[in-house]
Length: 257
Image 1 (cartoon, rainbow, N blue to C red):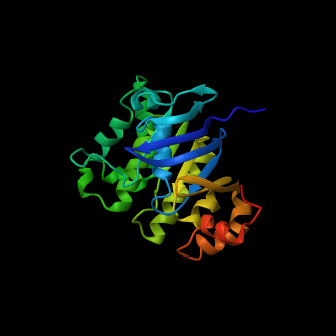
Image 2: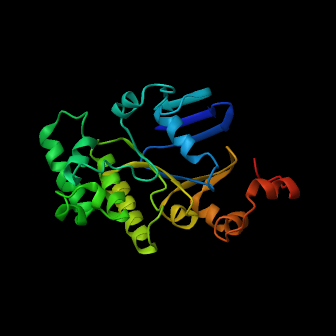
């Protein structure tokens, strides 16, 4: 049986006295795009931070190709090949585009390959080429998102974690960003774990998906199957306020885990 590139087993993570995620398990296999859906406060960002060591779990395991990496320093995790593009982009505002990209490659020693990867980033994100001397603070939201993903790419990761890449972007820019995400997966073979509220676009580009609510997993499956699910259509594509967990409480459906 193939070992997942990333696996979370029964993870519990707290913010102070508050349990943010509980009993969360997830697998990402090499070459996949896997999405995690959920509303604000579902625990999606906590999941990514736990995977990268930015938050310590109190219970459970985080494994990279079968080896435990939970609660390690985020810099150590990054050097193992996991790049995290955080929610809100978090570019370095007083550095130029090119300096931001160089920060992504801070741990690399293959200077010639780094120079080649600058060209690769500019080929995926052409607007950045003409803006490479501009301070990141003066980029548009879409340009900052391109830069944040490009910075993650510059670390030459085995696994790219993307937290809400569509946040605050126009529908046209969202389509552009997700087209590039798909290209990175297909052309570079880059494995991607994608956290999103935009269920429609996330399920269209991914192979498998998970649904989080109130700190726990309530559903998972092939993305095509999730797109056809009545509950996904109702609560994530139909803008319902109640979630799947609430529906389960009242209908007691046996199909969910």
